[in-house]
Image 1 (cartoon, helix red, strand yellow):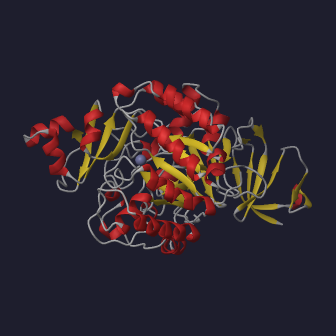
Image 2 (cartoon, protein in one colour; image 1 turned 45 degrees about the vertical axis):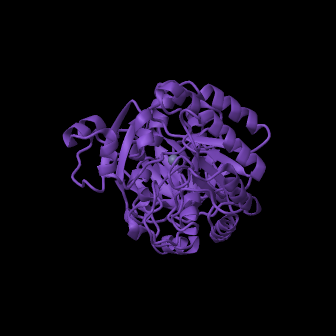
Image 3 (cartoon, rainbow, N blue to C red; image 1 turned 135 degrees about the horizontal axis):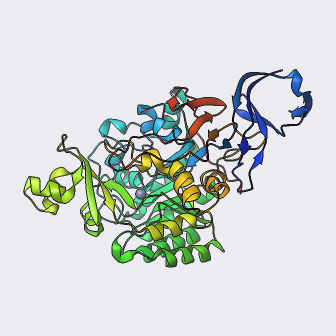
Length: 495
Ligand SMILES: [Zn+2]
């Protein structure tokens, strides 16, 4: 019998949070077919015993002094369009990521049937040509015809529903009729394979939506076992109120809920994570409530006045109006343009920025919280992106686990694999287990670290040796192999 891969001499951290162990494993097709101890003479494959000497292997990977883990799951991405633009998805596979959840923060490339101007933050996904998927089916088909090197799952963005149903009149709450229309589009999206609903209540496209509007939409999720994720209404002065609003939505709609990129934004709100995590811990006793975060104290999104006001420092990274704009501090650019900050924001819009506005202590507390998942929130369309796009996962492994010792490597991997697969309903992913999909990363635990910085954000991380997606090597020796084995993953609850 000829097997595709023997991965030998490595140490397995299986994604469950359990302690590491030494074992070899066999991969055939897109699955892990056997895990066995080094000294074993025979292995069981599909319920039959084989003498190891009778098996041959197309490829043998020596993982001596390396960790073999499930491929990482980036639960918070804006890769909706990136999977078509850069099919190698190097920014993610170079980190060991094999699955991305797209459609976050209320914005998803599908379903969207609208040709007018779009409000912030929708332009983050791309320019007008990008909006070509009126249904999740058409998006799924396009991906299946031309897949990338990672798996993709898609949330349905609340802002997309609003803009198309309300015909761009977003500065009000939706009427009853409009809510029914949005519910219908959402229901079809879920039937087509979307895994849930996301909101971006902090942004112009959705900040006029009252809590009731979200509850009515989230109720649709219940029937299809979809998930609700939220970039909350406020992550600064009204952070605690926003966490309470999220808990209320999850409770009244009775849906699995995830607080996206949890943070305390703005110096006057530092320390509030003590209270928010207490609220979350309490709520978890009666409902499914989870959270994700990225390992940096600066955020990044479009350049918007109310975000500029609360940040200590703002770097402007791109502008559609001023194409040759050099990345620089907003104050320096305003001086160059000889105008006020407010005038500058209007002049540059649509534009992007990095906001330095969080405290290390809050971040350490949030990322260490039991079950916090890891999501990069990277913006691949940005010419000078936040370093989280290329650095998030190796940074959690190298800095937060190995150097700062905030949690064990086993726990770090749990936060980026099985916890995420369970929460988002990704069947047979996120664990190294027989019959599970062979999404794997082999890395050096002593070396792994992010290299991307605010100055040089496009640097691949170190220490990620081999990345396997659905049984095929997609990244090796710091290079993409341009193998496009990714699948469109539809959600399914298996809690
Ligand atoms: Zn967001």
